[in-house]
Image (tube, rainbow, N blue to C red):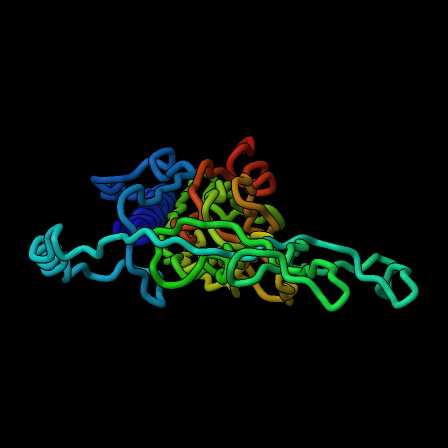
Length: 328
């Protein structure tokens, strides 16, 4: 992984020393005083807001947000080659007779609908039955003592073909099947920016960065975290700030978990959002109690098996204050 923050600190240090040297030389009237041989223009100490994220296979992420060393690639490839096609499990087609069901209203003994506390009528799933004639072993209709043909209620079934030999599909809910087959794959989106042209820090509050995600169509319902894995934030005076972090989530067809509010400290907060499969959602990172900075790198971690990045850009407050400003 590229360490852009080291570049930022290096540029900051060079620029600070160059400006200091220039100031000292200007104040010295001695003929022996001269400018440093190598100086850096403040126009060169600007790195536009940039986002980078992986587009290939998923990465292993440590607690610090760095990529883990890939030491098992060769072993995995060799194992896959050794397995070959013949050792793959073969699908078997099975035939099942499953009950036909329908949703009916629940009624009281008097035939009136049963309602809940909100006045909504209650329903239940029941098996469909039909009345058929009872026959003897020889196929003749069975009759009672009065000679009336006897009937009975039997369950209506339908035939289902399945390629899974484990159990009939009717016994496994779709959501449960999706969850059991789902495997997360975490990835990082890196954002970085530097501007030392005004020789001071930038101060702003509110909307900082925006990442737009497309929620994949085939994922199960649930909570998918979007977290800030690592930050490097530097001031003009080379002070490294460490903000408090409040992480967020994309809640797919489920309730959003409560998020804490920032206190009086420098804080980055990832706003949680609700979504459905197939939606495009905007995740905003807010900044509060900004101590002032002129450069940063930020690692945003997300589940690439659940979401795909479709756009990244600066938030309105950051752009208006630190990017689209008119320098004096």
